[in-house]
Length: 195
Image 1 (cartoon, rainbow, N blue to C red):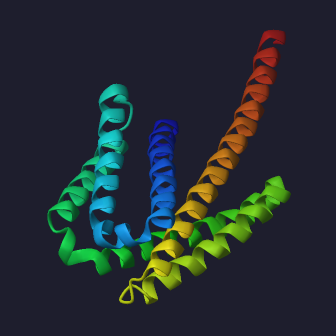
Image 2 (tube, helix red, strand yellow):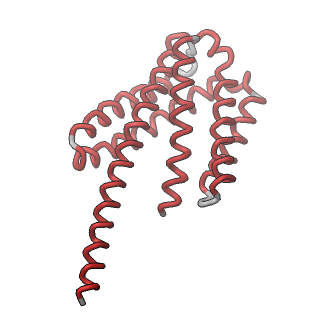
Image 3 (tube, rainbow, N blue to C red):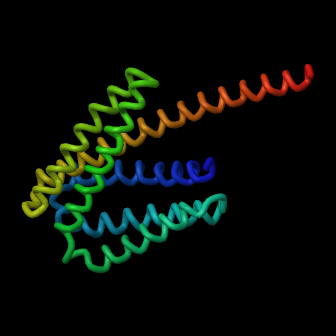
């Protein structure tokens, strides 16, 4: 289970970086992004997939990065090959990705509120904004304009920030759990030594 979480963590880091970079590009150059949005998405997926495959080859602890990497890599290659035909489909896929991420983070934020209080509220607010961005991206994909592309860019940046906050929160919770387990192990060892 620990190896699975480590693999998921490495995949999450590459997703955060690529989402943030794409978000900045979409906001800064919306007209060019409309022309080449599929190529950007395809290239981003190829990068994420390649990073995941390389991570597996270097680590070989869990097969998760390899499986995810191959799926994402193949998807990126297909998108790059057929980029002109699938621009609006890509926007819908972005919208679905952003919406699902927002919903997952929305649910996770309630758990964070119970454990970490204030940072959980921050995650809750960001997740609601992400959900709204996802819905708009899905419903407005046919009318692909500069403002929609910038909107998607903003959603990607918010997603990256939200995923980064979640990543930090999960690490903090994992450290607390590990400390409690270590403390419990020390108590058991001391008890055995006394016996």
